[in-house]
Length: 467
Image 1 (cartoon, one colour):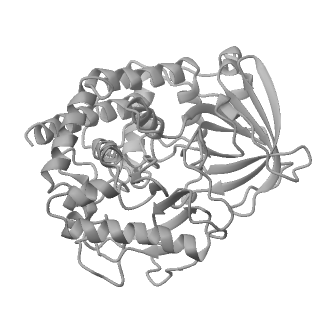
Image 2 (cartoon, helix red, strand yellow):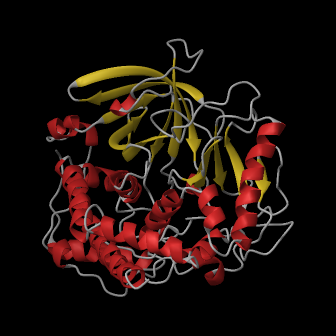
């Protein structure tokens, strides 16, 4: 590996410069570890003396024949996956994915695995996960810890609340390093992901998945409501009847271009019934017959623990078996969680996230009134307290979460992936929207993450244990 050792004075000068040009950040930073460290400047990531270390880390190499990857449509490409001393070749379609993340130079990608002539989608066990054709390569950028999404998904799975499987990869596109990426399963209806029965033909019987999200890709377009792929709640964020509710439900399964009018009517009636009963049910008995309480509680715990600023109101999935109760989940999109946003009180380790509408009443996308109503129920809070105390003694204990974070950092650091990622994307010490904390090193980003989680857990203990 070709690199230069930088003097302590030069290191100090370098980080002082980054702090001066950043848009915002903490007033004081502990430079102890920085002063004692060595910064590695890689001349050529592919040809380092530690190439053997790099080769042991799961790697993906995508070749597009130098076509540009665009938002839509997917372009044909080839994928080489190198891990466990084996190489596998795949034909894929690839496109840029995401909403606000599209503005970042480090893109995330949606890929489909294809047949040898790219003519049809085929299921493969990419990453060793159950076979599928749809996959996501998520590129952490605004999240400089690099681990927020994976940490949250793994915590959710650890408490038995099913989330997508995830795996770190070193990504190259057309022989250019793109840094650290996370392979993620897409939210799909199948026995290994969202385990629901298929809907056959035009029947209304089977499984449904809907998503609370923006009605369009343009968050400023309040009039862009499109009945072909979504429907609105009958209530505003305060639980009052409204013809212009800020809460939208997007059809996910069946897909918007496949769902029938009868199927739309059915799943809309499920939500209508749930909301109507919720605003009028004083004893919670009827609600208990409509929703799966434990799934609502697990969803609540994960979103409140992380204080995910998009939680409840965006990228929020629900699912329903025709013969079962309405359930929350799976969880999705936590790159702005754990204090990584500088608006709407997101970084404050205290206060409930479900009260978002009171903190940011002018935001176009509001939290459904459900959570306020549920948190007024003695039954809901008693069950929440039971589950919280169980999880805090096991998977969500301070020690368990710290150990999980340490395992990620050790794994990435041992394989030089942290330094490689920030060589490609030199953003440490700089403001990237919407960072609240700006650490001048990855270690400082991790220390902030750990400290924030510890304070959040402590505050939630005080609230929930006193129900």
